[in-house]
Amino acid sequence: MTSDWQKLNERIADCQACDRLVKHCHLVAKNKRRAYADQDYWGRPVPNMGPSRASLLIVGLAPGAHGANRTGRMFTGDRSGDWLFKALHRAGFANQAESSSQSDGLRLKSCVITAVCHCAPPDNKPTTEETLRCAPFLDQTIQELRPRVFLALGGLAWKAVVKYARQHDWLSGPQPKFSHGSFAQLVIPRRRKRCWLLGSYHPSQQNTFTGRLTEPMLNEIFQQANQFISDT
Image 1 (cartoon, rainbow, N blue to C red):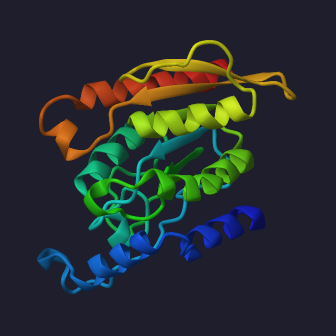
Image 2: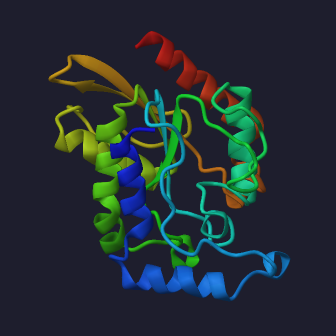
């Protein structure tokens, strides 16, 4: 892991820019869910997960209150993560399908997971101001990694990547619309290289319990991500 990458993750974990989110993370860590009463909660911003060099950057919304906010690792310890890591393992981006804690042996391969907001927000809804304060972390993550494929889990993550691409002249023409399986080509002017933005429904219980997102649908997304990586 490079020192710049490590320092970025340390800055994320130490951030206290949003009073509401800091207080909420601490409150959840104090008032634990009964099933985790004997565990120490992380209770602060959750850093990026993955190596300092990666072809795939997955962008989620925010840590789960009793998932990543408890374990200190993105998508770890909740049902959304169960779905995501199974798909990552099947696609070759993770060495195992289970993700329960920072000590479970899970390692990502050429893949990093980040979020639009690094703190667990009340009702899983960060405010516009909070996401704006967190945006520099996403910018720095992208600049450090230069991934070949961005996978946006949900509409807000899609908008965040599109905004970055517009600001850096990676994207021209009409605004690409989010949907499951939607994609847009991005071109990095100075390097004259292309990369891709790919969209997927978020593996939240709201989507997986209702059948809006199925395992085959998520598998197809990662197959497409692998294809984009091979083609660029």
